[in-house]
Length: 306
Image (cartoon, rainbow, N blue to C red):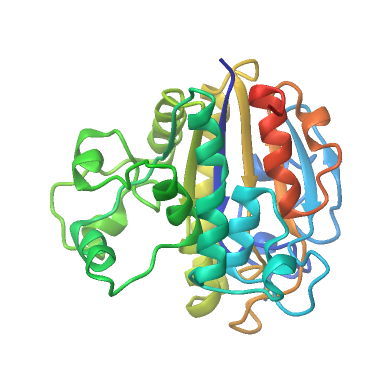
């Protein structure tokens, strides 16, 4: 059966081609640029069809005034519904009760399992995260809420140690530097890219969420963003070498803009990049205008929209 690997980059929009404010204009990212016909991922690039990919600017605003937010944007990506229109606003960072209810009624993790497929969020979380969720001190993000609504587990440190899940930064440095672990796996970007694809092959739908980009957009520097993108470029180089375009699709997208404009620390109203890699990419990309269009296309691709 065909499968989908969706790489979610939190807080990444298409900004000006200005290296003083936009990490995408500064970073050395030959692999990412190749996916957009050797163009940088910036506003001026527009729709691109390359040998391996479709690069398609996508609307996260969905006709609702204001700056797009994480909870409503992520929920739109995973439900195929215009969440901001349904609740009357862009909302975030964590889902409010109306968004949680919509996610519990239906989301793409649930659709895959109903069709007999396997789905997973393929990153692992430390014990302190699980403790905070279970104690009620922290709310799940929309994509985590969608996963749990489908009866699927949030992976823990055991999956990190076994190599069956990746850290949010792909390479595992955060578990050592930020969480105090001394023996968790460390990967090169190339090793992480290979492993991400290998893990994804166990599932009809594998979702990887990278929220470091949003943190950098709120609190980091342009140089921080460029370093992060260069790691991602190395991950994607290996992923593309490992991925067979006949096996399925890799989709890269985001919930809202942020890191592409480091002249301030707030979200933007920019379009976000959606990148589709694999056989059938042009047909899949046709008609994707907003974040709410992704799920219907994934449903058609995996199980003919049933």
